[in-house]
Each structure stands twice: as structure tokens, then as C-alpha cells.
Figure 1 (spheres, helix red, strand yellow):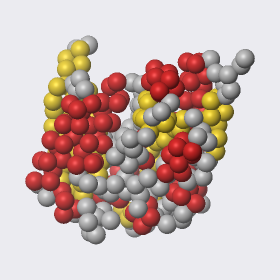
Figure 2 (cartoon, helix red, strand yellow):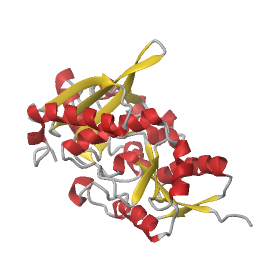
Figure 3 (cartoon, rainbow, N blue to C red):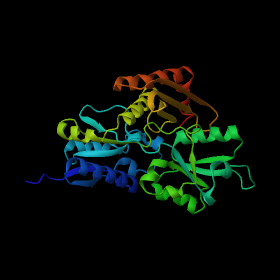
Figure 4 (cartoon, rainbow, N blue to C red):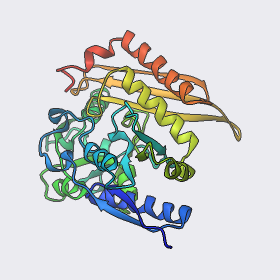
Length: 324
């Protein structure tokens, strides 16, 4: 008797469908079973309000998680940066596959880089669209320190909508996650990749999360074959920092953990974090380095350590009304 197809819950956007399709292919190869995509609309997809206004945390994942718990789907794929930091006991984060490019990317008019776009000119400040307070804070701080002239404009919408603002001339540029553009096969539209040395990504950016019901132990074990230990350790440290700062996914917090190697041997993990006001006037940006985590607890400890240092430097005061 042929086993029924596994049902993969996914958001309906082109990006969500693309990344879920990639996971579906991997699961088919892994299990030999058919996988069908089940499209689910989340509150974050239907609301036109800015993420900070509707709560940010969980707005893209709650409907998917509800479908898992009802048994409407067998597993779900999320952009990991959208997940709340607290993991429900009745759901299992079965796999975090290898991470895509974590950087932010600029799509600007006339093929311009950020520095050329924002150079002082008679046109006035370059209007750059983003829905992320984190990006606003770091872009404005970079502009202040480099004598550039920009105006960050809050926007919502899918990739086509956002890039459409540039094509129509309404905005000079938009900032998007490089990973999403890569997964959509649209990297050729990027005019500048923003270095993580001055714009840290959102915690977990570029990574996917594959989740299933905790009671489905056999499926969780099968999906675990797609897990990348280094990516999981990195995003665990980043999300631990986010949780310790008590900030949601719409807060102006950036974080990136990367592995440092001595020759061919990975020896340490470096975690960088930033919190800032959206006007870029104040940033708290610190880093810490420790041994490569050998357990979930080690990665959590690294994030908490850096969060404690950032809070001591005044990070808590940058995540309230002024920041949002």
C-alpha cells in the first residue's frame, strides 16, 4: 500500500512557496514519499499595518502552527527569523537546513550602490524603503557616520510590491533579504549587498525552520536529517540574544553568529549584536567570541552573555517608543 503524501504547510507568498518547494524536494529525496504543499494565509499576510503595530512576533507563523496542531498539515516551513523565540512544547523544531546568505541587499534605481545613491546631491535625500526598524537604525547610523543623505521610508508588501516602488520611481531603493532574492532566482536585481560590518541581519535571517508536531516522532526523526548543526548553533545563539533582550522580530535588533576557523579547523564562534534607535542617532553594538557550541545550552549561553553586556551598555532604553 502506497503511503499518503506528506502535507507541507506554507504561506502563500511567492517567496514562501519557493523555499517550501525546495524543502519539499529534499524531503521527497529523503523519505521517498510524495509531498504536497498546503497553502495557508497568516495574519501577517492579510494585515496592511506595519509589523511593529500588529505585534511583529508570530504574525506569520501562528496560522501555520495552528494547522499543525489540528493535524491539517504534517510539517511546516517558516523563515526562521519570523519565529517567536519561545518554542511551544507541543511542536518540534525538527530541522534548520544550511543557511542562505544572511546579508541584506539593496535594489536601487539606475544600478546604484548605497554610497553612490546616498551621496549628497541636488536631488535631495535618497528615499530608501524598508519595513524593518533594525534596517532603519543601521542604515541611518551608517549615513550619519559617512556623510550620506538618506530618508528611510516604512513599507510593507511582497518582493514584487517592494521592488515595484523603485521601478515606478516612488522610491530610490528598497532593502530586502538577500536570501529571499536568491531563493526566487532574482539576485541579478541586487545593486549592492550590504556588508554585515555595518548592517547586521535579523536574528536567524537566511535560515529556514522545519517544524512538526512533537507527537510525530518518526517524522521529526526523518526531517532531522536535513538539519545543519552549524546553522542551528548560530541561529540558536542569535535568537538567545533576542530573547534575553526581550525583543520581538519587529524590534530594531540585529545579530549574526559566524564560525571562525584556524586553517581548515573551526575553532570559535563569534556573535555580534546591535540595538539602535531608528533615526540612527544611538547604537549599542557589541560582540563576543567563545568556543564552538557543542550543545543547545552552549549556544544559548553565548547569546545571553552578549545580551547581558548590551543591556549593561544601555540597550534596553533603545527598544521602547523611540526605537519603534
